[in-house]
Every structure is written in structure tokens, then in C-alpha cells.
Length: 423
Image (cartoon, rainbow, N blue to C red; front, side, top):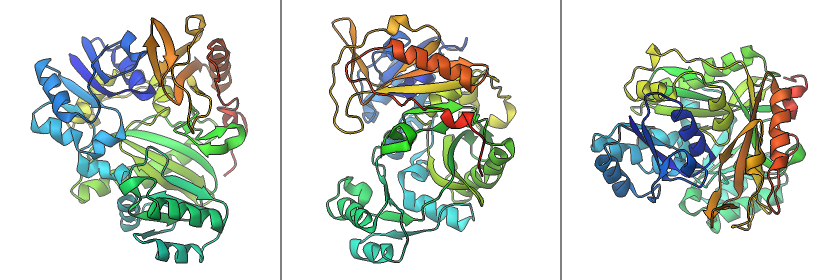
């Protein structure tokens, strides 16, 4: 089969890597891809938002399945576009991708169907939002309604910070139209956990859980990023808690979307907080997470193409999905300055010295035959082992073998998995 993967980051490199293990896959194309993806697939110079060019390419090259990686094209209707041209495509339609594209929609859905989440209010105007803030206690969680490249959530420690964040979003429009509405919600405490699931409408097939590390510095300090590392499994979180999250959040959410006339097909990603009252929903994403994908798919033993096809064809309930007992740990190597401004084109060395890990390229390019940095998050180093400690040792040993000026990474990825669980 001929497969087209759409996207350019570490998530897409992982998807290509997992798909090329399938005996049923012949040729993989990736649009636009990156320098690392180019080792496994033919990269095509078409951008993720160029729907006409992408669908024409799929028709010209007799593509059997399109897999959409990033969130923006999903919210903009890329799946609807391909379906209208009878091109098989993995991902939710725009009316289902709204579960990520609008935080207001999602909070209202959760409230309507009694799915656990933080208490909240929504606002379209600045003054009423500020008035509401003054009735709440710090810390304050403020979310821009729409997609904001993963940066639309602000946790403010003081009222002044919260008012400033509201002004930036609603008055100065730092996130553009994504800030036309905001959600102000209660601050939840506990451990975070991500559960991704394959969904084909009513059938929900959870993947193995993972835990992400968003803040840029050790000890969860500093500004939030797209993710500085992940690990799976989460041995310090009891299986009963994972099962409860699936039963009370993921399955009801999928069923709610069907009832709303927005059946979800693709990957539904639940960002959860494990509170003393039980798991609560922080957010949903309508696609694979990055860098969760790197550890989750590293543990997948079933043919990923089979799962994608079953999802597209509404036959997910008929497929047996198997996972490795081994652990996986992903350490992200970032550019100096990330998540703020960072340099590009910095030479990368040591990739050929990696011994025990798989390296996924997130933001790289090739210049004169040499890999160079081309993004904030540059590489994801994934170690696998019989447990978290073994996988972690491999990932960090290989992270140290890779060199580029200004390289930054957290040294405490998966540390929480090595300490006892506190509910």
C-alpha cells in the first residue's frame, strides 16, 4: 500500500517509523516531512494547509491511505476535503476535531454529559472576565478558546498576572481569533496523565498511558512547551485509576460526540489530572500527542496500518491490539532559548554515535550533507528497557552522545515514575 503522512515533526517521524514496519506498506510519502523523515519516506514539498495540492498528489500517486498528524489542518477540514474526493484518510472530520479546536465547545460538552472536569466559566468580553476573576482564588487557569500552537493556556499565580493574561488574549489578541473567547477554570492539583485512544465512533480502544513533561526546566519550572519528554508505562499510577479514566471520561466523550452528530474517528487524546476526587479532564486533542506518540508507538506490537484501516472502516472492535511490556522513555533535545526565540541552522553531531535508542527528528534540516537544527524541539531520544529505570538510562546516555551548540534538555524525565504514587 501507498501511504501519505501529513506533517513535519517528531510525531510524524514516529508515525512513518511505525508504518514502515508493516509488511503491507510499500511506499510512504510525507508532506512536508523533515530531514530525519527523509531517511524512511519520500518527502514532498507541500505544506500541511495546502489541501488542493495534497489531494491532487494523493490522486496522482494512487495513495491508499492518508494519515494526518497536526491539529490545525484537522480543525480546518482536511479530512472532509479528502473524503469528498474518495481518498481514504485517518483523522476526525472538522465537526469532530472541534473537541480540540474549541475549548469552550469541549467544556460545554463535558458539562452537558456530566464528564469530570474543572469548574469553569466562559467569556467573550474582557470586563466581565476580569470581574469574574476577582471572585476566584489563585492560581488562575486561563485558556484561549481556539488553537494557539499549544501556547494558549496560562496558569497565573496572582490576580495581576491573570488580568495581564486576559488583556494579552482578549484585548491585544496575541493569539489572534483563538482568543475571541476564553475559559477561566479552577486550578486542579494532582498528577497529570495522558491517555490516547483509537476511536471509530462508538468503539474506544485505549493505548498504553503516558506522562508528559510540559515545563521547560527540571522540577516542572519555567514556561510551558510543546513537551520536553514522556514515558510509558506510568507504573506509579494504579491500573484501577487508568481504568476509571477510560470508563468515566474517554468512553463517555466518544459517545457524547456521536449523540451530538459529530462521530469522532481517529485518535482521541485525553489530557487528565488525577485529583483526590478522581480523574478529571484538562483537555482533549484530536490527534496523536507529541512527544507521547514517540513512547506509545514504541510499545505497539500490532501492525499500525491495520489499526488505521480498521478505524477508517468502522471495524475497530474487530482488531486485537497488543502492547509490549517494555518501558519507553523519550528525552527531548531543544534549541537554546526554546520556548522563546531560538537560533536555527546549528550543526548537529553525534547522531551516528547513538547506541541503544531510536532518535526521532522534530526540528531538523540538512545543509551541505550535515544535519542542522530547524526548530525549538530538535530531536526526541527514545530508550526502551525492561522497566522505566533501564529505558531512562539508555535515553540519557544517548542524549549525551548527540551534540549541538546550546542543546538543552530536562534531566528529570520519568523521575516521577521512580517514586511512590500519591493520590
